[in-house]
Image (cartoon, rainbow, N blue to C red):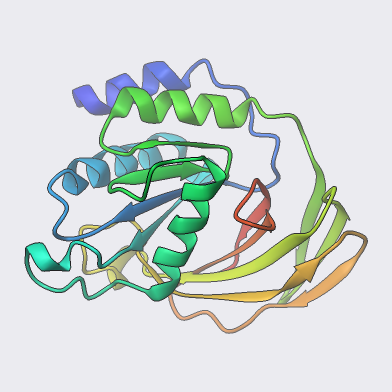
Length: 215
């Protein structure tokens, strides 16, 4: 066992089960021109290996470091928009890489295993929510009460053999399926080419209420 995986194992052994339904969504904001990002890739891949299906890591590539080197080919405008929303949500001075966000509840630098482990534990200790996803074929039933306006996101990403980058699960596209105020909603899943996820999140990039791998 590598030292990195050993550190994460010790930190996560005390964690309680996550209260949000589905895997915890761990978002990484990164760029090929970010010198600390390779360490973050290694850290989060170790988290995936340790947590298996309990964690979904998504890398949102950003292009604001392009002036330091080559163009970041995986960058999306939506990545910067999403990160700016988290800057406001967490009252940060500004965006940075490698930033990680945990179910919209915690954020920290992704290249620090100890901080990553602590953020995972804090996010898992959040109070439960009454939001549920149930899949039947290509249809998902969403039920519960989010306590306010929530957004339903469909995120596509590259996984396994489709991913030719060092990034864990780089996002290739994202779309908002619709807003949700609670009750029952039927969702017809779009086509998925590699990896896909359905994410229910408080409006304004708040807490992730439920998630589901849907590839």
